[in-house]
View 1 (cartoon, chains in turn yellow, blue):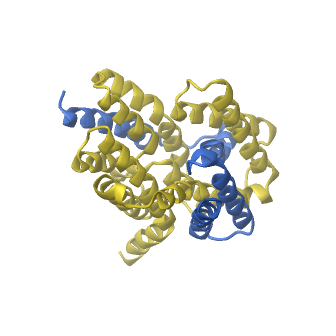
View 2: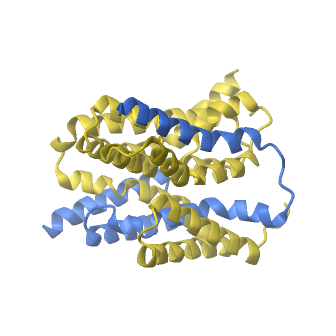
Length: 232
Length: 100
């Protein structure tokens, strides 16, 4: 039992930078949600039940335009499809205790950031570890939304502008150390970045969620062909 | 249409997309190619999400580039995630104040 609690706390600790990054990103989401005509309760409910940035931003666009529910479902499916891939990837490195009922709950915590931290974690993932990380990430995400929706206009613009980079700073901190040590990962990172720039320049009509899928799948497929991972 | 209905559809679709593969996929993958692909996926996802989006994340490309350079250097020095993230934001803030 104490061991279980321990992994929960470990997960929470590992999730602190995620929560802080989320706080700043969801703050911006809260501001736009109110601009789109939602109340701060509705905005916070969306953050609690969706826990995703690109999908939520696209979702409030659909609501603001009074689109159909089918459009809403199609948009969410496309933008969030990457989580399906991440779920399969994560399923390969789960602890034996991570059984079906735990997975039903744990699935809600599959986000880009939680996936990145869990999938680069050295040991098999225990439910408590992922739950701890999800719990603190959700609190950051929902409270940021609430504060942004409620009091967003009160903060000086230079502060909100600076907060915009927090989550990307965290991404860089995750990818640079392994990329500087392993050529295969450096190759993956550069290939994905170049593809992503090309998407932005030449295919601007593709939504950002969909662009991420194409670029990530392309870069990982290429890296896997050139640098197959040897068995440990 | 009621906003609650939109929110329910958003939440429902997003949850199912996450849950179905994660809960039902229990096989161990044997193919070296697919294993390698999944090994490189997180790095590819994070890189594609960061670049070029980071350059537009502060509303001013100059401050964003300064923040990016600070993040790259500190990450290369293996500093903790949170230190890199906050230092990047502090650099953007300082650059914003300085440039105005």
